[in-house]
Length: 288
Image (cartoon, rainbow, N blue to C red; front, side):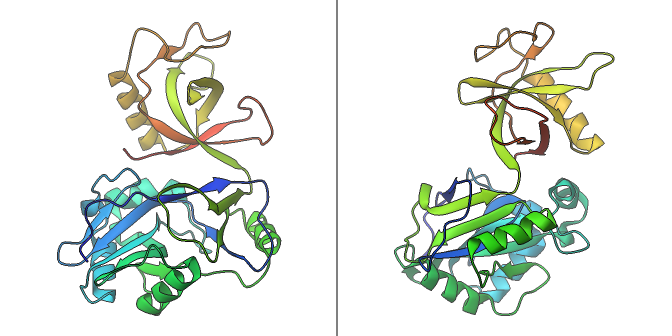
């Protein structure tokens, strides 16, 4: 069964702690770019919004297509770059995409279509079992995202100690459904959340900052904690987005800020349990 275009992702719901019990499986949440591999005669790699990024992942695509024997298949997973101890390091990802494509690794965590079969209606544990068997031994470019043999709390404690992003818990009996899901739950060791950039401020004597919103609500400022090259690209992109007024109601203290059209999305790391952003840094600039 050839995939009929992009298949929208299933997105986990964020919770404060992993669920417990035999109904749930748990795996590491990898810090990278969510990616759909559509394999077969014309293999493609698609971003979370269905943008074709095949040219950025040539080695991953070729390896995955070879592993499945060139048959039609759709895999859900994450493109990452690993550090020296095997943790996903998002800061290295943009550079690897540009200059070191052979450093990219695809962690596959779900199988949606295989051959003539659409298996999104299968139980999650059965889809993942078939995915594990299909992938076989891990390669340099393509690996299976393993379940943790223990409780969600135990895995969360381990990933917190390792400073890994978090844990994803999945209901073993669940089907794959596009959109936000309560059958997939994510627990993060530190709060990482997606925001839209509504403005910025760069003034002498102060660190540059981005003004961030969650939907139509202004949340506060975050300092870009990305590479110098990414910061340069960020400022260039924001210059093209200048506009006359802010798209959201702003708080006090933003008179010198520059409003922009709210198109650029980022991930900000911030303290948990706060109504507004505190000690916030932008750790990722998301693809279109």
